[in-house]
Image (cartoon, rainbow, N blue to C red):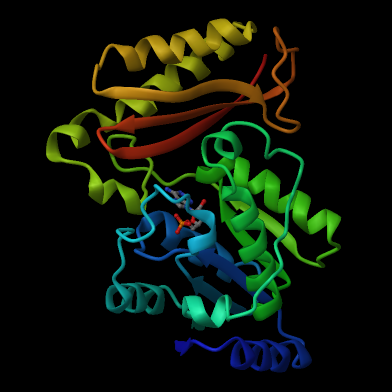
Length: 284
Ligand code: AMP
């Protein structure tokens, strides 16, 4: 596995592989790899010839009071893990390389961004759309893999690709969980042992919501209440939002239709740590 830190070098390498007729698959990440990331990398290998993982903790997608500075980082470990799953290139630019002095452009996606993460984290999706655009232009992929863990992000990225005519297929990979159900996240290291013991209740709460849908509950507010009620049993959670929404258009009807694909979105604080998770269900 080769480590690349310069945009120009990355572009030359990608261009060379494209000229060879090889298909490039990109996996954008912020590092501090866990099994969720490694699974995206393994899936990537099945979609092309060359896997490029990008590792960049993107400052523009963090709010001023968020955890950019203390976001966990371990480059040595990440290198070893990415290499162990057969990644070809690890593109790890510095902040200065990605946002040099005089940088003055921002990409704004106006669909799917006016709710949930877009409201709770103002500017977050502008940062995501901008950095994803830049990472695509640096790595020139044919395919890019994103995790369902950041469900809203997958819709925003698909919209971005469609609207800006990127010739890139977007693949969404399933959520990888700890044995007790907690969705893997680089931020899980922030949890105290006590917080960690209840963190999997997010998964149990989502399961209750999905079970209700499968048992015929179509009223959105009732589905939300079932999830909220479960979380409230554990008074450690501060609920940022819980919402069952149409998984394709993000609308929130009073009553879901038969056959509608629904995603239940959850964001909670456990102490100072903000965790997000989601689960899909189809209304019977
Ligand atoms: P991050 O490094 O947290 O920005 O995540 C990089 C990519 O990995 C994003 O597309 C995430 O959605 C995805 N990802 C993070 N955690 C998981 C997980 N537990 N399961 C599947 N994908 C994940």
